[in-house]
Length: 537
Ligand code: ISL
Image 1 (cartoon, helix red, strand yellow):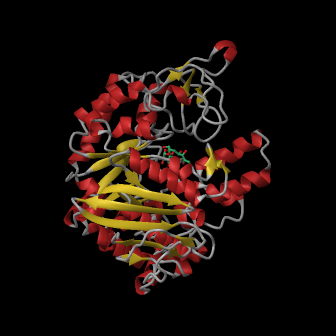
Image 2 (cartoon, helix red, strand yellow):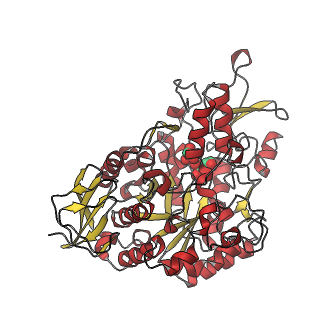
């Protein structure tokens, strides 16, 4: 049995731009987060993942860092983050900072010096001359659609960027760069940070820069996804800087075997990863090619991961994904559906992550035009799809439905003007019109709300060793219904979740400690989206 703190706590992700604006400039900020710590404490949260708060020109909302040690003036200053760390510690809430190590902003001093070949920065990035006949150095694509090389006039060479052209990739073959990165991570640990969420960490090491096998998306990926050199680098980070802190790596295109390679305790690389397989169950390879959501497919993937890994993270939302209620739940069942998902999230084995607004059942933003979708990925994909002549009507629908912008609309604190997010009418992202009904203030007063359900459930989990640490046995996944038993030194608890919109017959019985239907009515039937945690027979 492990006593690691990150196995016991419920995490909550804050996307600072749209969480709480304390000074009325229309953008969320650090003081806003500090103000809401008591709300999070009451919810039962034990740790926060803070999306990037560092200086950034914000092409990718902070995932393009121009100074790792300085807080973005949009969000406040360094003293404010130190205060946030102190207040959180007083409330026994740990803070895990997002850290983007694969790339920086092109406005970072390192890149500006690298372009000018100023030592020791000359090789901090991946620079190459044009290939034969003036072609790009290789045929790799980038994550946002399009090519991964951009020519820099000043240096007279191309640089690699696996994301936007304003996000040049760092070169981890350079020792001085590695030492600067380690020094910077130590800086934040000294300030009281308890760990890091490591952005796209499994693409850091480029094994070679050869052409990739042509693919519909991400040509070249076999040269950098979880390659052998990455494991060496991660072991080094673990021994030199991550010794006593928690790490969760965002790992793209990992299957269960690759995830194990990265997280097994004996390998000393990462503690946990965010995998994507369950979040991609409703699309083909890339999210723009959607297929209908199948609860059985989704639950089978979760079950496979539960069986394969001794421990991992659990999540159904984050700042890159559309809202789970709009995505996985049929219209008309949002209230029951949001609660069914919360039971799943908080009773499976692993470290659960709640994304801001998920606890009140926030929904996708009702975009009326493609111009309204403010996100660098959506914009790039739209332009890329134009070049490929993919029909406009198809792409418009796909982008509105799956854009990352859906999850970035401001947190809905009240039903008043601007959803209680900001005093300004001109907010960084528009406030979702449904804030009139879906908001913290209203849900706090309603005993049947999604928010009060989350609170109850988190409270139960926080006080239940079997829910926090028990082993899991998945008994069945059938017709959109999952049934499993957790076991901790002989203490057993069962959970059943019907993620389908139909009534389902069941061949097990479950009483209820907590259920989204109140008291369970029919012994051998689960109602649409009915979910319960109870004692097994
Ligand atoms: O967002 C995605 C799917 O819509 C992914 O392809 C995403 O780009 C990928 O998971 C990496 O995400 C992370 O790094 C990006 C940043 O834009 C994302 O917000 C971040 O979570 C580049 O730093």
